Image 1 (cartoon, rainbow over the protein chains, first blue to last red):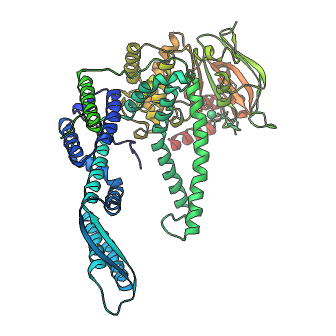
Image 2 (image 1 turned 45 degrees about the vertical axis):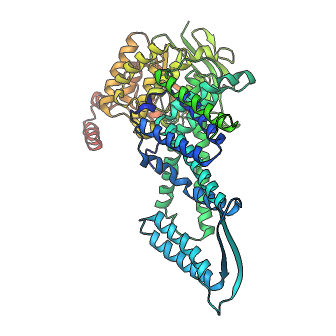
Length: 326
Length: 266
Ligand SMILES: Nc1ncnc2c1ncn2[C@@H]1O[C@H](COP(=O)(O)OP(=O)(O)OP(=O)(O)O)[C@@H](O)[C@H]1O
Ligand SMILES: [Mg+2]
């Protein structure tokens, strides 16, 4: 775990690296709202193209963005399937019966085992998953044996609108994730917090101290790797005394987790006390004016980003209000 | 009047165990005082009391004529910098640069000046190549150097080092000591908590703590002549001094023994 870095920031020198974090945060915030204002599949497709355009301008590789998609892949698939099943508008495209029977369930389980077995080789994971998905559907639709015991049957209907909506929703998600990836990929965590601090500073009037807020975030960021290191050390120390973290029954595992958590909590408490001492002794007084080593500076790039955001937002709004139409 | 005056100081973390007992001493402006004592003798606790992180149950601390209390603590902290024992838990910034800047930011030092001092002091502790590194990418000794640079950059009148160089390799320690010596000559008041007797010998005075009490406080040279002081407070005499003592007592066998011990330890 040594040297893990929080956030996805990757050093580089594309266009967006030199944009002030404030314009980036505000821009992406409004672009996301704008994306939710869009109404149909053509509009989101256009927006997707524009987003890819941003990637090209920023010299950000698609592969990195795709990697950012990995954790929410299941969510995407789920959204897609859910939308297809739930929407019942437009022409009907597929109308068929699914036979949920003992043999079919058995076949699907066999397919599942094969899928998980092949997945162990860690190749073509996505293709395997699709194979499993379509294989199961195929089994439910077409396999029926005369001697089989039929549990129930399910009427699968897919409508035109359903497909359209699911594509619409998935593209919208794609855009939003791509946008946020652009932000996190090209902005250092420190700049991100400072940008946020600066943007939230008007809230001081209602009693929200954005400076303290930013400090809390940046200290948390700073300590996450340390805490991981700590967990590692404790685990190694316990392993060297015979604890085995990889095996054992649930009860034993639970015991091990607790034996890890308790020292971690105690250490974290001690740490935070010492850290507070160190900050205080270096003249930190909450809420007092300080100078800053990081300076945020606007440049012509920020004007471009802001202009793009404003135009995009305005167009989306006009679409929404049916002022623009086709 | 002395620059730092500690009078009748008592402190206990838990009810029935006093960690500091009736501590009395004073330090003049520009002095270099080494604080010695066995583990748990109360050195770090004393240091914390002097910067107002803990409040003594009895007794007073005066610095530059100001009595340390709730109202004066912020002013007093502007005069004292302290480098703590554990380098991990005093790293506030996300990067080396941020961390060196932290104290100066709090003192509202203008940005241009901060940048200058960061460059200067990062070089002084040989960390100029690591300015953008995060603490998890640094070794213990490197973190200690950053902590030292952060305190030096605040340019306070007094600096307390709490075993602040324990993780440095001998060469960088010597380098740093040279620089600290120079600052001392320019008028910096130094309180250096250490287990390294050779480092302590750089100081003008030695304050020896034993079980929370001041066991001895005198200038280094006169203390060195009294070998019992060291033995009775569980401290080690410098080898050269032990040998010198044995020689004056004409115990040649023990000289031989000491020398063998010294060689085999190295
Ligand atoms: N936060 C705390 N809570 C309770 N007791 C403490 C705390 N910190 C220190 N002590 C106790 O106070 C005594 C003095 O500790 P202190 O850290 O001042 O010793 P030290 O002289 O700095 O030792 P070392 O050479 O190991 O750094 C010890 O007996 C220790 O157990
Ligand atoms: Mg200590």
